[in-house]
Image (cartoon, rainbow, N blue to C red; front, side, top):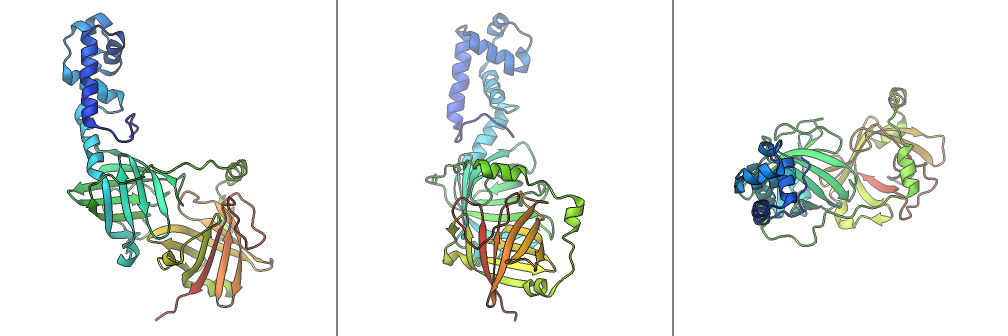
Length: 366
């Protein structure tokens, strides 16, 4: 729902706006009369003089304020503002399920969700996610739309539903690129994440600004523009025969190192990540968040070995990423460029290059 409200709307302030608007109308203010004519259905065909003489009341002025800010009625605006205030504070994760699989409790212990008005920050071991959100309380269940501004998903959107009962909050979201869920449940392949949270504090959290949009360089913008969706023939080229090297990459891997855009993930957070591969399809997850889901193909004739990803989900779905891979003893490391960017030539990750370096060690099977 598109609204014209401030980031942290206050219902008392909106009530005062309506009272002021009504007072100005009674005093003959032309702008107030135009507001009634523009936004109040009952005044649509009235002249300013007739509007002033119509005897409109406070409820009518409240309806004008509601419609002017993007709502169909004052009660809907009131419910919206109250719902935002009810969300405000700090929330801790009780449980999370993604694509039908439960996220281990240990992976959620250090995560929290902070709300301030229509701004949020999700803090987790792998990264912080900042952004803004809108809610639609006129739908059943209520809807929430998320716009990621800062963090790994910056520039992407997610759509979901939510319900709140006191200090209990349940949100079911589309993993970036999936459709909005219709129920509070997930299943394999749904692309949905079910989050259950408990309020830890009602206090307004500090420094939750929604993040700062990072202006992309001209080179980055050009590379994104040159990253078209893969054609059917290009996608079919990822249905490759398994080679000994691809088979060696199958199984579950633990992260040893992760560097994104020149910033290294702290060692204490690495234990919350995993890389799994079955056939030539790989998935990288940190703290329950799917970071990469792709089909892989290798060119073992190249030095270093060339690797291509066909992204299967998220904001880069059906786009191809280019990278390189090499073995270091029993460990393997990848360096991947964003879709549209050239394949890296060496294993270095200077800041501002939007490259991702990851190093992995195979987990022992029991």
